[in-house]
Image (tube, rainbow, N blue to C red):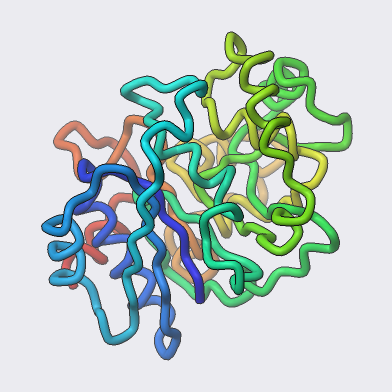
Length: 268
């Protein structure tokens, strides 16, 4: 099973926990984890390999040229590594037909098989939304997304590499960034939604991209009064828990309900 991660050396400990959760929650599956980066060192990769199950996981580093995203909006919060998922089809091995992109700030707690083998139905991506209306409508207007599209979180995405190689236009991506750079709040995520929102299959966020915020908002929503989810439901049904945003379980000021899943994977 092919996994793509993009990061710098600031997230190595979280990456180790994420990779550990992959192998612990998917016994019998061998993972090839491609790490796209510009500045990681041999020492960084040694650290990773010393702390993960290398019998069930192979780590492959892919160094990206420094100047590839010189025209993209880059800040301390949104480093250039975030753009690698947009162009993954350009630098990953040509024999790969699909890959699962995962942010390093998440844990996998159940089988990935259903998500990984999803039928793309001619689409480029599969991902989950992490917002409720009216914020979703605001994002669609802000980015001029197609009417039939849904704003998704790009931290968990299945990529149809075969079709991306055939149909992705690199110049179109940079033109979009240039045109909408003043509207991009979450730069690469906004670009993916703005350009490919109509070509993305939507998967259940409660299952494949459950965040603290979505967990709270879902249970507070009036329409879910009779179908609230709890930690037992999450243990049985959720596949990926994503600690996106500033509230993260490895920080001292963490306040949330889902940190126990991260801490349990940290013990291995």
